[in-house]
Image (tube, rainbow, N blue to C red; front, side):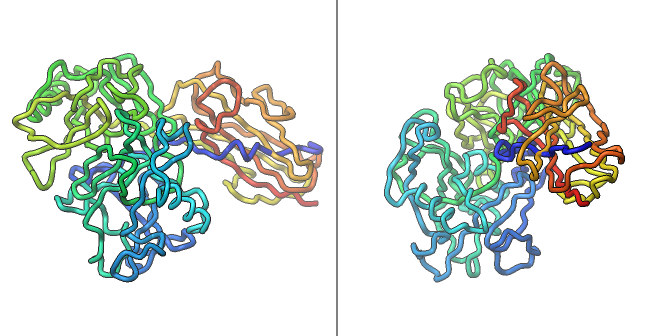
Length: 473
């Protein structure tokens, strides 16, 4: 196949869309126990016994977190990682600041800019965490006064100089008042709005936002599946408010009689799972009402207990997404149950001559070159989607795409259109029969699936794999 062009628009693939489990709350039973890896200043993994580290990778969400330090036993503002530094909340972008930029000065945007200008860890995409991401690192097995977080997030001499105040900013504006932003109090793990003019602590994060592309499936049986977390939810709610004990009995009743979706493993969600449903861009209720139309703007029970006030349990308010704790026997609130869908997330791959990426795979210009693509939709089976199989040719600096008709065309064209529901794929495509030659040079091939099925490449809902191929004489 003479002059084959291999390529895909790299700028269009700046975001990943993938199913990411919600980390456990720190209390048994454990499904996805919190798990972290120490990283050095270049982002390399270190053993757990390492005495010096700069960043921490969350092995459940794949997010990378800044580690706080304190080199001198007291606040050192010259050290941007110092655990004692505080900042006002400021974001000048009206598209993301909730309608209120906050208070400039020694502020969060200055901190993030300093971190990125320093290319900390070799990266320049550090940002403030969303409130959900900040919630996911809370350890609810630690009682007040905390800190309710793994000590791995602080690399402080002897860990004796950790600040005594633990309210950390998120990037999320408080839904009920644009002059406040959400944050976590790591004394006990609760979330509430705080005036953007106040000075609070900051911990930076990098990686794709865990809730950047929430996607729900209405299963048509009074249940909704969240493909971003793999959790299946009761679409409605229990008919009445109830105590925590009655809420647990309600789960037993549903399971014994297979009364919801034909399943018998419904349970109360953890506080982190319940938080994953919150939509902080709306209020009263702070949830996607198109999928959960019967949501009351009130508190909902979680299974997470308060380790200090052990007769209390944690709840999420779906008026504003905040969460707090109340006596589990004296108060009655709403209930929405959850189950583990037990469906695997989507997986796809592309390989060249039986070798997986990123390569490079080296072949001669007249040798057989076989490209294999595979797709297992998992929890996303049946969803409409665009599939893309494209190639970028560095010799010609151009793109071509392979279509379902079995031909290569110029530019970026869908391999599979939106009219087809997502199903298993296992195909092999010969780029060279061995009798025709491929132009010498380097190529990158991409195979991706796009869940905004409009025939236009949308990076915000894209999952993909790629492989590099070098063609020699």
